Each structure stands twice: as C-alpha cells, then as structure tokens.
Length: 414
Image (cartoon, rainbow, N blue to C red; front, side, top):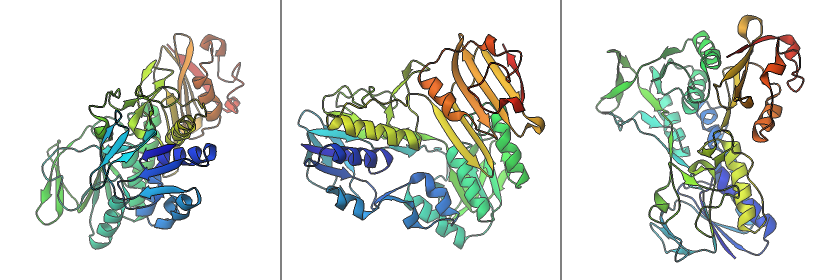
C-alpha cells in the first residue's frame, strides 16, 4: 500500500504515526512545503519571545521519519491532486502515485489587501520563516510594534512582544478581543490584563495602509491617526489551503468537507487539520475549527482509516482555549442561546457561562478558572440533555457535574 500525506504539521504527522502503527509494511511519503522537520506552530510566539530554542519546537525530528520508515520530501509544493490517476503533482518534481492520500495542507494567513502590506517589517506569523524574520527585525530595529487583529495569532504575538519589552499597540476591527471565540464578558478578561501591561488597544479600528520606503515607518488607522511603528504583525485569521484539490470533484466549502472517518467524497482521499470542515454536532452543519488538538485527533482518525482501522472523529464541536499574560479562557459550542446561566466570583476574576438552546446544553465560556471544562466538553459532544430550569435558583444547586460552583452565585438570563 502506498500512502501519500500532503502536509507535515499536526495532522500529517499524527496520521503518519497512526498509519505505521497499523501497517508495518506500507510505503509512507510525506510532502512538506517548508524546509524544516515537523514543528509546533503554536510555539512560534514563544520562539519570538526567546523563551525556547528552535529545537524545542520540534515534534518530529529527523529520527522520527527514519524510525518509522517515512520518506519526507521537504520544500516541495504540491500543485494539484489527480484522484482519477491516483497521482500527486509536485511543482519541481515527478508525480507521485498513491493508493491512499491525505490532504493536510493546513491554512494560510489572511491578507489585509492594503497599501504597503508588502513592506519590510510587515509580517504574517504563520511559519517558522516568519518567526525567524520577526526575531531578527526585533533585534535590528527599535520602536513601537503594532499587531493587527485580535484573534489567537494577535494575542499570543502580543505576549511575545511584551516579553521582548517592546511597546505594543493592538488594532482590532471588532468591538472586543477574540471575538470569534468569546462573548463580551470573556473578552474583558484579556482587555483588563492587557491594559495592566501598558498595551494600547484600539477597538473598532482598521489599518488602511502602511507607510515607508526601505522599511516600515507607520500605519494609517481608520480613526484618522497615523501610528508610528517599525514592526507590524498581521493576524486577521486564516484561509484553508484548498488549491491543490480544485477541480478534482472533492467537495469543498471554505475547507474540504469530510465525514466522521475524515474521508472526502472521493474514494481513497482523506483530509485533516486546518483545511477540513467536519460535521459540527451543535450547529448541525460542516464547519472548520483550526486548532492544534483537533488537527492531531483528525490526523489520527484519518491515518487509522487509511490503514483500514475504522476510527471515528469525535471533535465536531467548535472550541478553543488560550492563556495570555495570566488570563486563561476556554470556550466551546455556542456563545449565545435561548437561555444563559452566568456566574461571577467576587471581583470578576472568575466568569462562567452555560448556554442553552431549545432546552439543550449548547455551549460554555469559562474565564479565570476553567475547572470542569473537560466534563462540559464531553457533554457537548455527547449531546447530553440538560433542563436549565432544574438548575435554578442558583448554580450551587442541581449542578454537581461542574465542580466548585459552590464558590459562586448565578442567574439565568432568558
């Protein structure tokens, strides 16, 4: 059996490991568009902060591929997939044949499409090369740094720059930090933490363009101000890398649509990681969720099924977790619903919310103390029925599956 995996990050590495566990003799080929061995992208901000070395980021060193008999092609870009012929076409190489194919091409940073975006000093933090360039620029230049976007890339990048003792401005189009992940109260945890560290946060503000000739000098903001800076990091979200499957008959929305076995609707072709849209059991539709743990799980399930193992993907729930500057938050499922059970601890250092839709538990937000997150996530995935009216008149009664709620009071908002 010939297995080909396009992608050498979380999903691809996880799939290769699982394939070899179940098939000791099959040929496994991994194609990577980067010149590196497998590393953890989520650790790029820590590398920029100089808290870790490059070797500390490796999740699949050279020995990993050798020990499992995996052939790794580094620095190779896949131009297109031909499922009819069972081939993968590489930009600078001969086509590779396959019996089973995994598309784990990940995602790319979304561009602003504004003047000056290609100036030296303006970066999209997505790959090792980006982090290396930012580290070098921070050494060579002084002055202010701006981060464009209040998503995960933006807030983790901000933490790294504070560790480098740089003045940081965060420019966000929406009215809150992590707007795709949190409600307003959850976002306030980060806003308070950032302001304590001297970060200037510009809400409801866009970057209209960057200025400079040989290097970045500043950014024009939509509120009419010109913000001087020497480095800018853009974190405005990502787009799935679906180009290589265009015209193949593989079903695509924004990402590649897969079933619970991570199989596409084309025989022998599987997909996993940031590039896919599995079925979301809460929203009852296919949608993506570009986070590391789900990429690992999806890759494992895909690898198992490529080797005829029969694994099932259980991660079809939108969720995310982040800790920045001591503020820790996790959310899953929906942020808003027909009824919301909200709890604060004194001083609002802890915030918890359960969301119900049509008398079903459909989401939660935990900030400051994430005790019980694992139980709540399992309940979401298993679609456990919970009658919110049975939880009144406070969170401390009838809510035993959420530990330590006796420390807070609560209300239900309809």
